[in-house]
Length: 169
Image (cartoon, rainbow, N blue to C red):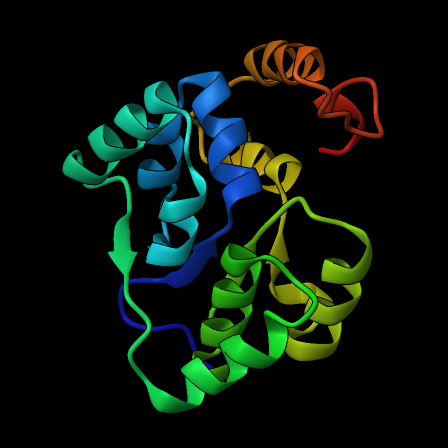
């Protein structure tokens, strides 16, 4: 499948949004060249912290990403099937990605990762580290900045399995 004219479309799950909210860097999502980020409305509903919700709404107004409502009947049916064992945001991302050939950005592991790999393939799943590597490679961040963000995310109990982004570049 070829990429749409505007680039790769990425459906962003709650886990990714919360990490970028912690970093106060939602702008990176809107700045990655060749990528367009969409947030399903089911994901927006999962952001309940008032401060995070306010920053998310600022990100929407700033055009870093757009909100997507699921209205396609096939996607609604897929959402219902996924939602039997996954959260609402994860289910929404997978239902749309599977139907439209989009990418999914999520840090979820376990059942989600196995389900997503079966539904859309491992090569269409992006994680926070993947997005930070893309930011470094596109000149939006330095390795030192990304390592600082890695340390900050660890204070929120998000662990990456490497010491420095230098190791994976």
